[in-house]
Amino acid sequence: MTEERFLKLRLAVSKKIGSRRFSHTLGVETAIIELGERYLPGDLPRLRVAALLHDVTKEWPPEEQIAFCERRGIALSEEERRAPRILHAKTGAYIAEREFSPYVDKGILQAIALHTTGGRDMAVFDELLYLADYIEPTRTYADCVALRQDFFEGYKTAEDPLRHLHATVKRALLMTVEDIRRVGGSVCSATMEAIAFLDKKLSRKS
Ligand SMILES: [Fe+2]
Image (cartoon, rainbow, N blue to C red; front, side, top):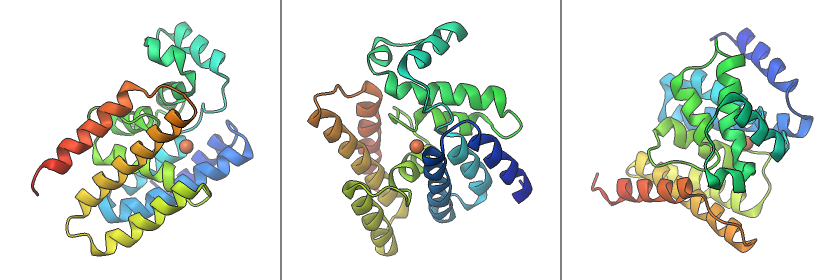
């Protein structure tokens, strides 16, 4: 994909979200380039597309997220109805597929759909979007800063870089769980499944 097409895509995305969210989105693109160079260099253009499109519906209010899904026949679980905040991953993947079809493919749509909660079966591509969203440079929250530092420091000496990625994504998921519990929220089953999935990967001898 040419840089000119990326410019076009960025412009189209900038019209869908506010300027702060757009800065965050560009931060995720920057972070996913750093991660992609290390883990999936052949997929850099696809990773960048996933980063640019991951939050296109994040600013829709909860009732709009639910109404949109109902209108389009997108199945909603009880859990999703209770926590419509997570629905932007689903509605975002839907909009990406319908409105940005020349840019996307199944793998990109899956990564967008899983970027908020994780899921029971995550490809490395999905893990990279999840992590990029967490550690992108405009995030100043202490947990994000610490995770970013530890990830890049640890990567330098990691014997098994893939294991290092799984462990880092698991840590990000656990920190999210902790944050949700701290405010008395309920944690999505998809997040617990993602942690179990990564645990299984980490328990295997490499
Ligand atoms: Fe995001």
